[in-house]
Amino acid sequence: MNRYEESKKIYAEYGVDTEAALNKLAGIPISIHCCQGDDIAVFESNAALTGGIQVTGNYPGKAAGPEQLMQDFDVALACMPGKKRINLHAIYAITDEKIDRDNIKPEYFDKWIEYAKERNLGIDFNPTFFSHPMVKGGLTLSSPDKEVRDFWIRHGITCNETAHYIAQKLGCKVLYNLWIPDGLKDVPADRLTPRLRLKDSLDQIFAKKYDDVIYAVESKVFGIGVESYTVGSNEFYLNYAAQNGICCLLDNGHYHPTEVVSDKIPSMLAFNDYVALHVTRGVRWDSDHVVLLEDEIREIAKEIVRNDATERVLIGLDYFDASINRISAWVVGQQAMSKALLNALLTPAAKMKELQDSGNFTALMVLNEETKTLPLGDVWNEYLSRCGVDAKWFDRVLAYENEVQLKR
Ligand code: RNT
Ligand code: ZN
Image (cartoon, rainbow, N blue to C red; front, side, top):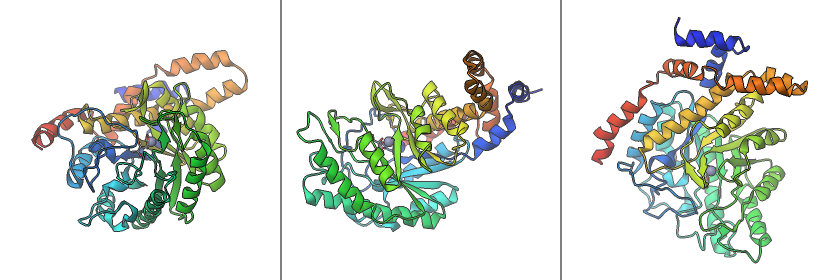
């Protein structure tokens, strides 16, 4: 009997059906962020990365331009099991025209739509409120300068049209996630007025909403250079999203170190049809390290699976590592999230809920600990094999690095 068959029997003793878990996992989409492939480069110009986010490292061979990014993404996709989406930013527009950030034309994304269709990928879309000269003093939609706000409101609106265009062309919903870098390095004199300006700007951007677009606003507690105050704080966006029937996206790098997004997900599920998620790994700060299979990622996955929310929680990866092979970074993160979801699908959640509700916390603790040493790896390898992903995928990535990337 092979290892998978053995593991199937072991899980069955806990009332877990590994076949059902494998089938369910294959249908849970994970949105892969394009930015990991080229260090959030800006196709329209060589603008430096701003916005208080950082990509550290200078590993050779990164993609330059859409063709190389798509080429590298194809190598990564072949190493990623399950359903994928590609998460694009407005700065990835493909056109020979001079791009005005406040006039992003939907057709600039025709090549990405074609690319996604050929690979049966969904697309998620983000306006890009950073790396541009109209970010004045680190501010965009909350700026005291109306000209600056109006420019970025036009950007938000034109990106809404683009998200709708993509959804129509693909025939499936698109997540439009808005994150702005606005904030202050040191102690503010006025925390409220910038937030009222942001609220007004958002009202203008979201004045028109499309049924085939899911809207999200992404909060953050600090950034590099905005350590003392972010206009788009968690409380601000939680309220804005609730009042306007949109998502407040949870990025697990955007809260205080002891806060966990896994606990926030069920609270959001209690009130919202959808919960948008950015999965990352902060080390000491919101460092956007590659996602690894750690306790919090496992807990996040458990909240998605045991609350039957695999179609309601929109999982997106969001990290940037330029210190290692960028394709490997994509794959490790996507596989870590997939393993966490599989681990959740292989957890006897109903039994555990029963023990909690009956107050049998002793048996719950014992069972929880036992599940940690069940043969997840054997089921994972079966999943890779069924998805046609070589367990030795890393050899393939290294071969491509030598044949293609290092020759760039
Ligand atoms: C920044 C936010 C935001 C960005 C991407 C590029 O801290 O996490 O989601 O990472 O939009
Ligand atoms: Zn994010």
